[in-house]
Amino acid sequence: MIKIVTEKLKPSSPKKENTVLIITVIFLILIAALLIKMRKTNIQEQKINKGEVSSYSNFSSVESGIYADLINFTNEIKIKTDDENLPSIKDLEKNDIPPFTKDITWEERGKIQWEKIEKEKSTYYIGLSENVTVSGNFAVIVNNRNYEDIKILFIRTHLHKEDVEFSLDENFPNWEEIIPYTGEDERRKFEGKGDM
Image (tube, rainbow, N blue to C red):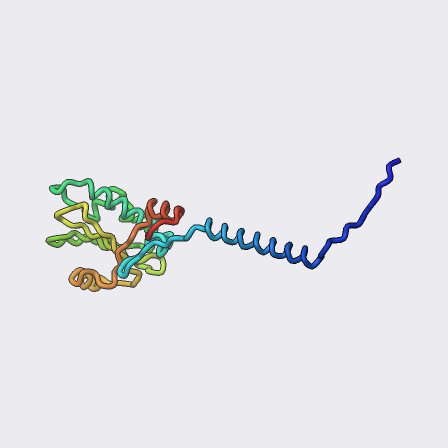
């Protein structure tokens, strides 16, 4: 049979050992906090100027869907040649091009009434929503001399046709240009680099 001998060791100075232990714990906490701060990525927000609106953070899901459809529509315009005419609203409806097609989705998105207005320098596709609580109003501005030069504008105010004429004459006051949220913005956000 083995006999276990227990022996109690007393610290030479309990006060000194407690002090060293507390300092060590504080030191470890400070190092951990410093490492966390160094590893933390800064969340970059999309840089939006006055007169602009973000398609990512300011739009409802309905407005985002309409905007995505308009981006697809403008991409089709950009590949047209200068001698081709821009499509009419009737042609767009007939060819089932969203968001111009009047279907169930169109009804759910605020029943936007589209109108094409041609001026000397630009062609305008103006979409007025019947229900601005569901979706705001959109305007696509196409430069007639360069189909690559296209702007999409947005306003979340109930408008009448007279307001559209005023907007055309006054270069769309109170309308905001839509700034897309791109994959490059998302990459910079995760890398924590630069302004968006």
